[in-house]
Amino acid sequence: MAEVTVPEGSMATGSSRADRLTSFSAADFAIPSGSEEDWRFTPLDRIADFLSDDFTAQSLTYESRPAMLETVGRDDPRLGRVLKPEDRAGAVAWEAFDRAYVLTIKAGEPQDVSVVAHVPHGMHAAHLVVIAEPGAQGTVVVEHTGDGDLTEGVEIDVREGANLTFVSVQEGGSDARYVSSHRVTEAKDAVFRHIVVTLSGAFVRMTSSLAFTGEHADAKMLGAYLTDSGQHSEHHVFVDHEAPDCKSRVTYKGAVQGENTSAVWIGDALVGPEADGTDSYEMNRNLVLTRGAEVNSVPNLEIETGKILQCGHASTSGRFDEEQLFYLQARGIPEALARRLVIRGFFAELIDQIDIESVRTKLLDAIDHELDLSAALTGDETASVPSVEHEVVA
Figure 1: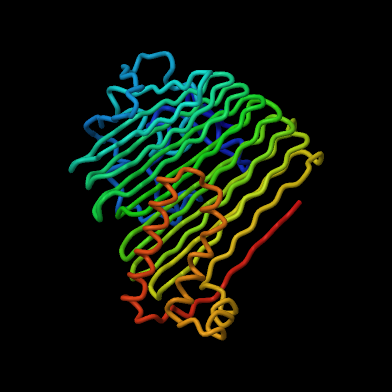
Figure 2 (figure 1 turned 90 degrees about the vertical axis):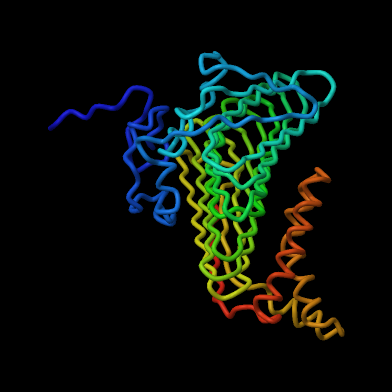
């Protein structure tokens, strides 16, 4: 048998999610062909330059309020300590930046930080490290705007007993492309909230991976995405239960509409052999508002111990609930208004869990805009699409 050599800093691939290749070197990953599980729903021709061997980009400048960001070089020891990239895009992003930013949330008074990442025309690379020190409390909101292209790596280190909320908002221009790798470690007794809101952009691909490294930690990962004509959005979520007695909840909801529109959600949960007492559930719901839009939703669950509290996942994609629409119309509410109420109600459960007013307002305004656009596209007629439901609980 031929000997298999695993590149330094990476892991060999295998059938288990735990065996997936991870590396800081883009050379360790082949350029995807589209047959790979993580790339089979991706229109690779639209981001070929993000994956090429000769990728080059300018470094993006972040700005924060209050001014808490440190600008550091690639040799800063705080970089590259939170997991490793899991695909070629993440490794390319790691190699592309020449300066990075570090944001430290210290113990004491709760801290709220707003970070603006305005991406001008051209190709840009960025790297952000967020450290929540033991016992710290804080909220970090990163807003991505502009018409340019961005490849980004984000490391989030949530240390023992910390309570951190991290929000990423994507609202780039109609031609903007955004590829990002979020990597999170969560220590003992920590509480972490990860919120993703994707409102616009020609192409968005986000991979968000979280690993529990200490017991009794709690994670909630929320996402909302609105995808319009000609746009493509992807959200990949991975929760790695390595430590015992940890709890995770993943809830993503999306609405898609228009011709040549596609949205992808892939959710992976891995419960390791030492993760007794795990409580994990992931859910994805999608509304297809018009003809010509496509949704792919793939939940995956892998359990390596029988001593769990619960583990499950659910996925539903289709048009909105006709019974709710009928109920409202039967009480004298016009069809257009009834449809608006039903769709806002679809997102209500998710919005209620976002306690940051500025983010809630952005999302609600964007939903209203989508509803107005949907009515213009369809003449108040939604597409007749089949509903697809999938639920597993262990």
